[in-house]
Length: 276
Image 1: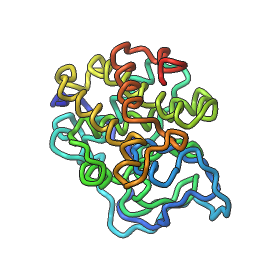
Image 2 (image 1 turned 60 degrees about the vertical axis):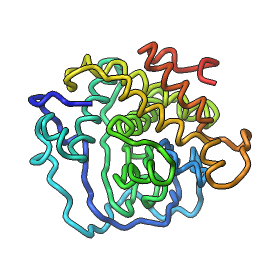
Image 3 (image 1 turned 180 degrees about the horizontal axis):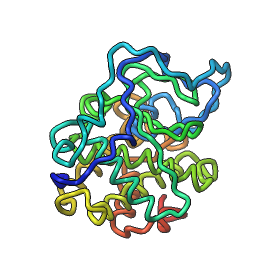
Image 4 (image 1 turned 90 degrees about the horizontal axis):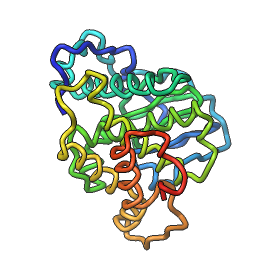
């Protein structure tokens, strides 16, 4: 997954907040949509929690954030820096949806470390990547990608990371379309996986990447999708597999949803019976 060396990056689409407060792993007073997988462990999908603590304020900063505008200027930077890679992936995803969806509005990705406050409340890194409809932002602690391998058994890799980010932007698309609350949490998550697959199919056309994604790249995404399937997570935690408690879908369902999007390249196919 190589970026074109001379492609310009728009670092304004990613905000680096550095270290901060806001922990507790809860989202009081807001609805949060999670997609990375850790949220499945605490059933944090489309959950409403009481006791609003007034999220949405900036966390106290423990370390100065990086100046992404200076660090992440071209595709060459994206191939050399994890944060710049996030910028490049976000740029590519939003470039695709901007051309696909007339009502698309850009959403920032917020990088944080430790904890963060959002319009949906406070969170810490234990919840994994998530999308907050209240402020239309994707939140990501980069340590999740280590957890994806060490805790969830995924092989990892750059495209596994891209899949996770594309999934969260799938939730943003759902929010813009009014589809976040239109079905079960499993249906919502599988559609976001499918949207991620559609972007993967179309990404090369956007001009950010040196070549089309390889089967090795797609295998990284499918492996990550399988690793965060509800059945795999339940098995890994030592419990029995209980399909009725699924919040994101089984490994098989998540892989199939991404593959459907990738095979068709058509977001219109990411709904209905084909996803489950």
